[in-house]
Amino acid sequence: MKQEALDFLQEARALHRLIAARPTTFLNEATLFKGWTVEEIVRHLHVWNVMADLSRTDPEAFAAQIGHVGAGIMSGTTRQVERQVCTLHGRPLIVAWQDRYERMGAEWALVDPRLRLKWVGPDLSARTSISASIMEVWAHGQAVFDIAGVSRSPTPRLWNIVALGLNTFGWSHQVNGYDVPPAMPLVRLTLGQEVREWGDRTVGRVEGPAEAFAQVVTQTRSIADVPLTVMGDVAQRWMQMAQCFAGPRNAPPSAGTRHIAQTG
Image 1 (cartoon, one colour):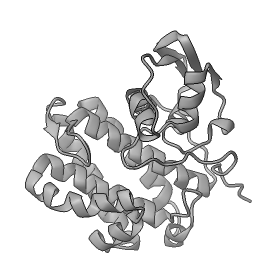
Image 2 (cartoon, rainbow, N blue to C red):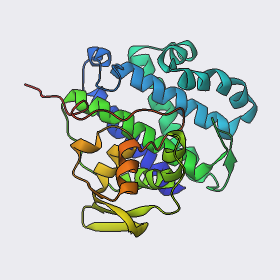
Image 3 (cartoon, rainbow, N blue to C red):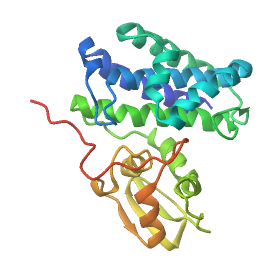
Image 4 (cartoon, one colour):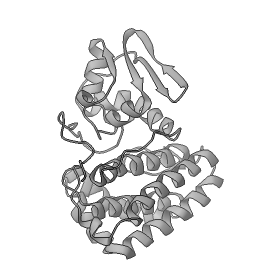
């Protein structure tokens, strides 16, 4: 768990540096992620960091709160519910978020990765839980980097998100009402000088940068806007509806709707 905890910490710190370098008014900027403001994204990350921590440290408190907090996601009222459970704004919110992620980075490194934890749906392993937290801060952070007009350089931390994308091949079909295919297409991804591959080339393939795959499965980019080669019916359908996060079906963004803002 040490590497996953460090990856989570570094990803959160990268987003914090971007926000901290800008005036407080930046928190009021509306992003291209469903119109959420930067502050609403930070609040979302903080609320679910707290929930992930509670699932580990106080299962009873987690059980008492997850019904209310989780209902926001299922009903489409996420922002409203999160404002109820976290009333902080501005710099106090940033400080609380930073304090929590710094503590998580230290404490989760010592957790048994096989520990089973309660969550919104089925129980998760501790390793899957912290990997999901990495995914959340990276994916929601994309909208913040976009509105700031800043391009991120891919890092090896992306392999955590790739793993979630692969592991939710079946879930992406189920949440969209499709039967799960018997085999996953070949996925061949490149990050720097490293190339990794998974799946069965006889049922199609998805090939290209790991960052592009991560963007598609987290729905931060449309498949039409990233440099992935997608061949075969199974691969095509998967990339058109991929969803590596829990909750109800979310329609991926349309072509051209999520991108880096032009500044200057």
